[in-house]
Every structure is written in structure tokens, then in C-alpha cells.
Length: 323
Image (cartoon, rainbow, N blue to C red; front, side, top):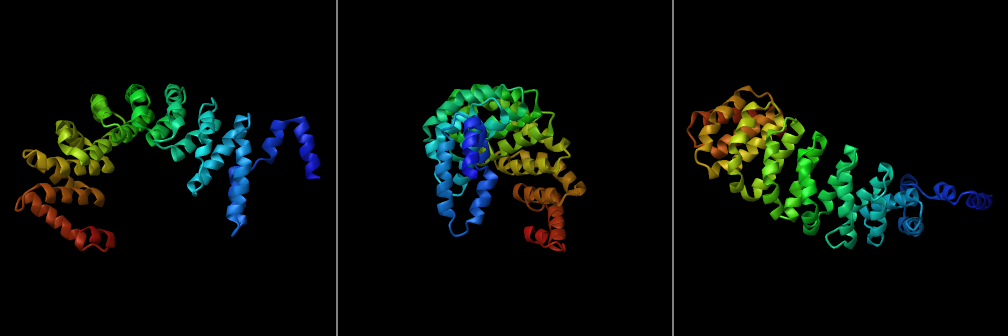
């Protein structure tokens, strides 16, 4: 019978037995769905099993248990009791085992999680990994669990990633830094020179991430970023990336009220965009930029109104709504 098989497996290999009989995440989710109306009872049983699994010396078993806890946490169950086990899983050398640990910490760690400080050295170690995906995983996790104290201890290591030879990591670092600036505002002053350099990045993904980061920062205090106008203007007149153009136009809408000479400088690129772009999204943002930043009665304002009329007469209800 099953009991006899379990006993033989345990005698032969305790590790093999645990791998055979522990529930995978998929099996647990199927079990929850199969116990309709009795989900709580089933989940409570699963939690009792997981409590034993996270105490296992087998890191694969512990990693699977942490992954299941991450899922249960997302549907409302507390997993704060297992945070140290999460850090243990994060510290493993194998990507497949440590990944559930990083996922779980990003989901459940808060500013009051004591063991959060234990992650600092793990981040530093994985920033230097030969695998860009391990480093990227650490950067993504940091953006979710960073606190002012973690920021102060790790900012130097993270900001150095802005000069990485791998565009994938530069892009992730730029986006992570925005989240860090929210938690630790003084970090912005430290990182500003290096972040500004990314506006000259040859990779479109990094460049777009950098513009987007400055856009979100400018929403809070646009005056701090007036010095970036020459670089932003250069990007606007040279890019063919629609998404990047939209972000730049949004950013100029914030900067124009603070610099009286800027609207006149934008007349030529805005005219070119309105006359040449085939993307309705870019055209709409250009129209909005003109109407928000240029005085009425100008030739460009008249052109923007004409383009807006086309939106109003469009058969596309979305375009009519925007107009």
C-alpha cells in the first residue's frame, strides 16, 4: 500500500521521499480548486505541510515551500513567520532554487521585516553574478523591498551598474533607482550625474527607461530637471521611437511653464511631428503639448486644432473620446 511505499522510500532516501510526496505549487492550486467550499480547510492543511517543508535541510524542498507560501500570501494568507527561510532560499547558488526566494521577498517583505537587512550582502553578491538574469532578478527584488537603510548600504553598488556593459542591467538599474529615490530622496543627488549620462545611451531600452524615470521625477518637482532640456530636445528631434516621443512630449509639458523660451524652441519639432507621424498616439500627445504650452492664435495652434477635428470626426470611438 501507500504507507508501505512511503516507509521503503524513507529508508532508502529521505530526500527522494520528500520530493515524491511534497505538493508542488501546481498540485496545491489544483487541490484548492478541487475543494470548492472547503478551501480554508484544505489551505490550512497545506500550511501545516509547508511548515514542515521550510524546516527541511533540503534546499529544493524549502524552495518549493517558499514558492507555495508566496502564492498563499497573494491570496491573503500571512507568511511573515517564514521570512528567514525566504532569505535562506535567496542565498542558494542555483538560479532555479533561489528564484522563488526572491519572488517571495518581493511580495511579502515590508519596511518592518527584520530579516530584510540580511538581504544586503545577497544583493551585492548577485549584482556581480556572471548571469545577467541573476543580477536582474536581484535588482527587481531590491526595487520592491528597499528601505532607506538598505539604500544607504547598497547605493554605491547599484549605481555602478549604470555603467554595466549589458544594456539589460543598465535598464533595470535605471528603473530600480526611481523606486529607491522614493524611499531615500537623498540618493537622487548622489546618482543624478550617472543617471543623466544614460540619456546618451545607445540602447533604446535604456534610453526610454531613463526618460521615463526623469518624467516620473519631474511630476514631483519639474524645476530640478530644467538642466536636462538640451539633451531631451536632442533626443526628441532625432528619435523615431513612438513610445519615447510620447514620454518626451509629456516631460516637455511639465518643463515649458518653467522656461519661457522653451515653447518657441519646440515649434519646429512639434510641427514636424503633427505633419509626419502616422501614430495616432504620438499625434494626440503632440496636439496636447501644443495646446498646453503655446499661446492661442499661432499657426501651430491652428494646425493642432485642425488635427483635433480629425480625431473628433474619426470612426474610432477611442479617438473621438480623446478629442
